[in-house]
Length: 163
Image 1 (tube, rainbow, N blue to C red):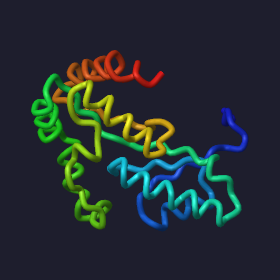
Image 2: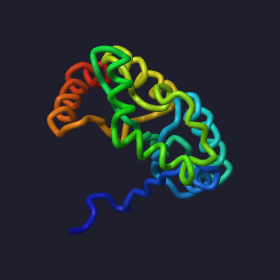
Image 3: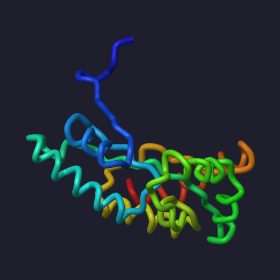
Image 4: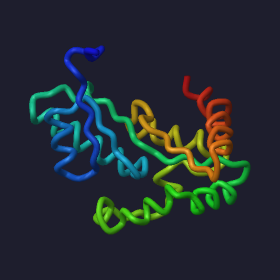
């Protein structure tokens, strides 16, 4: 089938300077990953500046981060669920390649980890940093049922604050 949009939108991932340059010159959207709201704010300012220098309207670039979600009734349970997940192991493996130039710091600052109320606050910080939408939410869980329950909890307790 033919694409619904014409022209086809170009979404670009990557947190590096080169990736941001590609977004500024060619991208309709930027898909950053594993960045804190402040890191996104700084990079959004940089991308907007580069887009203007390239003769583009920076407002046409959608900012849509990819984040891990670990939601529980206490912050400790949410962090434990995150640390026990395959996603966490994957992030650790990327420290030698994709994330080698990026300090991981506190995972709570770069993901949505905590109680529903804490996650509402975290999403608000991403919104204030210039994010237009959340493109990919990776829910952690030890089973399909747990992931589905967490997705339902997010939909019922977090999403209503942003619609």
